[in-house]
Amino acid sequence: MMAQVLSKSALVPHPASAAAPVRLGTKLSLVGTDVLKAEFVAIGDIGRVLIPAPAIPERRDELWRHTCFELFFREGASGAYHEFNFAPSRHWAAYRFDSYREGMAPSAVTGVDIYLETDPTRFALTAWLDVRPFRGIYGKHVSLTAVIEETDGTKSYWALAHPPGKPDFHDPACFVLELPAAGTA
Image (cartoon, rainbow, N blue to C red; front, side, top):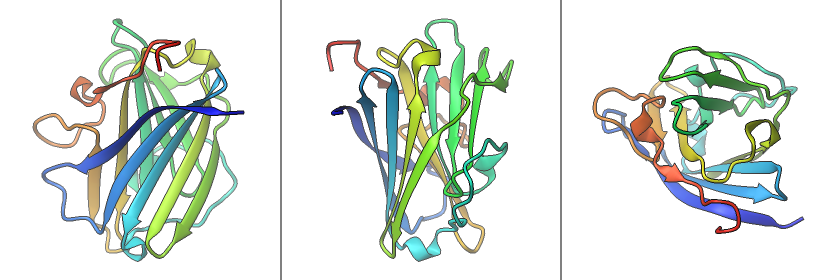
């Protein structure tokens, strides 16, 4: 089945983040009408990035405390949004918020498929997410983010856009990618 590319974007480090050993890029594609494929690629000195060994995929909380790739999207004008975390360990998390950092609850997602590729200069994580529980993905405002932890514990925070102040991936200012309406991509 062919995938329809919805976006290709570079992530930028937060201005307060230490110089990172990598550059990050993302690609979102729709496979059929029900599956969102989110690809995150880091290029650079991968040996300096703390990447846990792959494990059995399962839901876990607080993945953002270490190297983690994230996808957020708003439901619409209500202010409600969803957060998905994808870790190199193949652990994942999915939450729904009623509004900015309020009303957090587990998302309806029951599983996420994660595939990894790595070599000394490149690391790629690809996550497949069934978007049927969210009435599709077209027309949504999206944010793609990452936390990169280095082997010495240094962390950098990456996003399509950052609000002023400290890193805050939940801030509405981060939701800068608007996916096209159905049939226009």
